[in-house]
Structures are given as structure tokens and as C-alpha cells.
Image 1 (cartoon, rainbow over the protein chains, first blue to last red):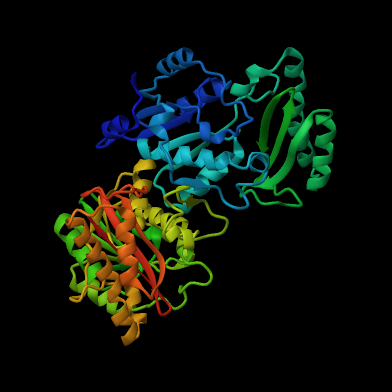
Image 2 (cartoon, helix red, strand yellow):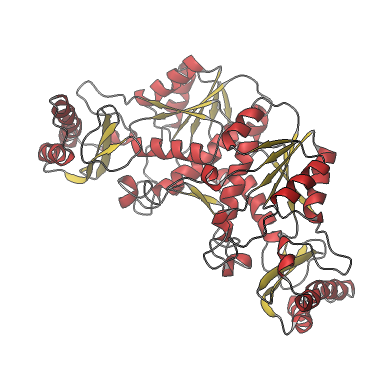
Length: 273
Length: 273
């Protein structure tokens, strides 16, 4: 496995590459969710590139940027064992300069849910993803569906700006008890770990209601909120796959999304129904 | 010459193109300035593509979008005679959708000079240029140095976002009396046309002062303002080529920029010294 830290070195290295490239951008602290992205890329493309970059621009001042889990050695090992060809490990100073052109999330879809409480978050996500995609020029790039809104906005960016990459969404990986894998799960105490199960339970409940043909969005949300109590809820929402508000679930075209605070940790999850 | 109007059709058509592509994005109303860009592309690349798109997003509500000169037939003829291979003539509805990801000009360099009086202008320019560059994926793209700030910001965007295209700046073409060619010159009455010569005169004066080793920026600006009077001045500025404020001209690394209103028409010009 080749490790490259300079963006322009990687870009030059890949310049005349004719093989298909699968790209998995991450913020490190790799877990089984990331590994499933890497495996998917390994199966579909000839060269697999993983980037590890904790992007400062997607954290606001009071968020967990400085304490975001860093596991460089373990991450490197995981990439090696997963058959990654190139690990891209840039420094912030090589990614960002002064007084920069940046991406601006769409007015509506960029500033609801996550974007409502974190208004600069998706600008930072889109800017860094654009940079990384332009450095690597992959055939396909792989993102987890757990960050559903991020996945939606990256798809919008690629389509609206006529970018050439194909974006692939990969299913969320869960612990056997239902908790969605997240690098932030390490923040949870034992008690919080138990409480966090309310998240997946609320999503499974939504699934069960929909199977029983209860499709009214407000009714489902109310039932979910009951299960989630007494956790602090950032949002419980049911949208269509284009992230537009709906009153009734459109089976096969809906996403149920939850974000709550467990202790001091924001956890999000969703289910596509 | 092939004429294509659908962005995705053009993108697909060029997908596996291995020849070098030279791209000249324009807003139509082509004049000798544009032709010099096309000729330069013709000399340097194998396939020459010109786009004609009057970009609504770079005009504010009170600007001249609806009356911006349109000369589709003449423009097509000019492209054909200049050896253009593909003319790209998109509709606004195929370029822009609803609730879009867009580009945001840099905080400082995007909001001085043109960006000061037209604060959304460069966001619109960068967004459409990004889209056009991604549709065409050119080897080289050609822009006039007359729009110096635009040229600077497009270069910044390409560098900061790690885009693959090479941006080429082409010298301003002038009438024999010094007036820089612009599609907006057609707005000028005979009297205004005479008054507009003050612009190039003020720039030549700056050049002469610098040759005489008068390098103090304030002194030069004062002399220029005298020549420009009584025209309404938007700005007279001397910056380094990175668009940063300087007190003393750095010969070989400076740009002298002027924008004035002649009648109802904004005219800009500059000289690189």
C-alpha cells in the first residue's frame, strides 16, 4: 500500500491512470462501516484509494473537531488489510489556503435537519468532498447512507455541477443490537450506550408501522418520539428521497431520519423505506 | 461545426475524447476579443469548443441581463469562420435547476472592486464556469485578461479546488484609439464613445508614470482620477497580481484597474505592468 500526503503529488501520480479508481473519503477512526465501503470499492474498481482527513471546515467552533477520535496507526493497518492501494493522508495546510473559493450548500436542502443546527456544516463537507474528488478523479466514490443528508447533497453537487464521478451509497452497518456504527460511538458511557438503542428501536418501529400501512407522517413521528424520550431530540423526520417534506410515506421513496443527543454526543441514524 | 445545446449530450459526446480540448466560454455578442481567444485555442489544442450562455446568475436584479446584446446568428457565423469545432449553446433551464449547490467567491478577493458593487456577481461567474468546465473537461480554457478579477478568481478556483484544467489569460484587444473591446460598447452613444477614451488614457498615463519610476500607488491613482473626471468612477486601483493591496507598484507584478460609468454603461479596463 502506497501512502501519499501531498495532494498535488497524488493528483500527478494518478494523472494518466487508465484503470478504474474507487475512492472512499473518510475522517479516519475506521470501523466496520468504512470497511464495507472499502470492500465494495475493491469489488467494483481496479484501484482503491482511501483518504483520511478530519476536515476542520465542517465543524463549528463549539463542536468536537479537536477531540474527534484519531487512530492513524490502526487506520493504516485496517487499510492495508482491506486491500487498499493508496492511502491519502493530507495535512490541513495542503488542503486549505487563505481566502478561498468554497461551496455553498443549497438554500433549502442544505439548511434543514443537520444543516439547521449546524448551518456551516454542509458548506464544509461539500467543499472538502469537491477538493478530494478533484484530486483523485475517481470513477466511483463511496459514501455511507448513514449520513443520508450528506449523501443526498453530494449527489446533488455532482449532478448540478456536472461532475464526472459516480456516487455510490452503501448500507449502514450496525452492531448486533441495532446501533449504527459511528466513530463517535467511542464517546458513549455504558449507560449512554444502552440509551442509544432507542435510536434504532424508533426506526424499526417506523418500519413496522409502515408495514401495517400506517403511512401518516405525523402519526409515525409521534410514536417514534415516545420511544426516544427522554433523549434530547434534534429531529425526527420523514422525507422523500429528494429530501422534500411529505405528509404521507411513499413506500420505496422515503427516508426516516433521527438525530438525538446521548450524553454529550450527537448520534444520527436513518432507515430507507 | 457541430452545434449542441444539451449539457449532458455534450458531456457524453466528449466522454472518451483523447484529443486535447480548448474551451472558450463566452456570453455571446462576439467581437475581436473573443476571436483572439478562439484563435489562441485553435493554435494550441486539437478540438476547439466555444460556449455561448448569458448567465443569469451573474447579473443582479437591476443590471442589464434582459437587454444584454444577443447576436446568435452572427455569433454562429463567427464561430464557423474561426474554425470552431463545437458550439455549445445551452438553455438556462438545462444549466440551472432548483435549490442548487453553488460556488461562493473568496471572502476578500471576491468582494472588492467588481465584487464590492456587485456582491453576488462572482458567485454566479464561478458557479457557471465550474459547470461549463465540468461539462466540457477541457485541457485548456481561455479567458480575456480584460476581466482581470474574473480571471484571477477563476485561477484561484481551479487551484484551490484542485481542478485539472489549465487556465490561459489572453491579452485585451483594443480599438485603434485604445478603447478595450467589450460587448457593452454597443450601448455607447457617439459622445459617450469619445468620453470612454479617458479609460485607456488613464491606464497609459499610469504606465508612463511607472516608466518614469513614479511608483507610489496613491500618486498614480490621483493622476488617473484627474484624467477620468468627470466620469463616475467605481474604482481606480493598483494591486499586485494576487489581487492584494500594495502601496508601491511592483514592476512586473502589478495590475492597474479602472471601472467607470459612461452614460448608463459600466466599462472596465486594466493594464498589467
